[in-house]
Image (cartoon, rainbow, N blue to C red; front, side, top):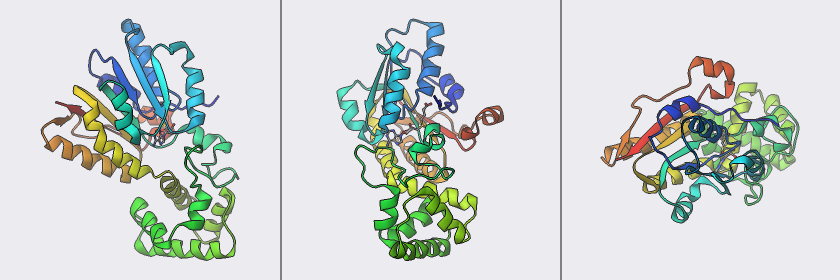
Amino acid sequence: MLRHIPVLAEEIYEHLPENRQLWFDWTFGHWGHAEYFLSHEEKKRNISWIKIIGTDIDLNMIEKARELTKEYKDNINILHSSYANISEIAKEQWLFDYELLDLWVNLEHFKDWSRWFSIKTDAPLDMRFDQSKNDMTAEKWLKTTKPEIIKSAFEEYWDFSQKTAEYLTKLICEQRQKSPISTTFQLKDFLLNNHFNQKKIAVIFQVIRIMVNNELDQLKIFLEKFPTTLKKGWRCFIITYHSVEDRITKNALKALAESCDFMLINKKVIIPHYTEVQRNKAARSAKLRIIQKL
Ligand SMILES: C[S@@+](CC[C@H](N)C(=O)[O-])C[C@H]1O[C@@H](n2cnc3c(N)ncnc32)[C@H](O)[C@@H]1O
């Protein structure tokens, strides 16, 4: 089975408050981070009183995580939910000692062709994390979205120039009149034929994925709600992977720190050591921000 390699795990572990008891891992994935922390705790103390709650929006991920964590079922409870439901989940649990939000996708989304995120294999154009609730596939998004929303997505989320965003929107709208773009290779070929290079194509796929999964709105909800779910003296860790989500996170945490109820732990963003990037290419754009409730 393909396993996701946790990013910046050592740096997070070093900054965890002492005597943490209730942890929340909002993007549980393949339990990479949780496994790293629990195995390190296990070497130091009795872990029977540690409780980890994990959510993931992707049912495939949940199924694998439950299988992988069987041995720790007294410590770990995995829920199928979005981190945007943080207030509802927190209501049913205690306030948290520490929370982790590790954005972006799981390695499985890219490497397992049947998950339909990769441009490297031909598959239906889907890109949904949550196939059980979300019916907006990438194919449907390209087919039905209003031109002004397509244009602003490319402009805002990846800082394409206004001219490029307009050109791309025009191309997509013209193409959908002729025939729908239904597979990953159809989308890739369409973009190649219109002179977008591989790098730009990867970015376009990413913007579509962000829109299909409503990722930035989910992040904004999380950032607004998490402050009330943390215990006093405890911390929230957020790893971002691209400039737009990082900008949103940075501004939200900065505003919280100005309120005097919170303190930024790292004034300068933490990035992976080059040896980590050598071991795990997926870590190359990661940025870690940590905030503590006072
Ligand atoms: C980078 S991976 C997390 C990897 C995990 N930390 C590990 O080390 O195994 C991000 C995960 O977030 C999940 N995800 C994406 N959007 C989500 C959302 N709105 N709510 C909860 N999970 C989400 C994805 O399915 C994916 O498994």
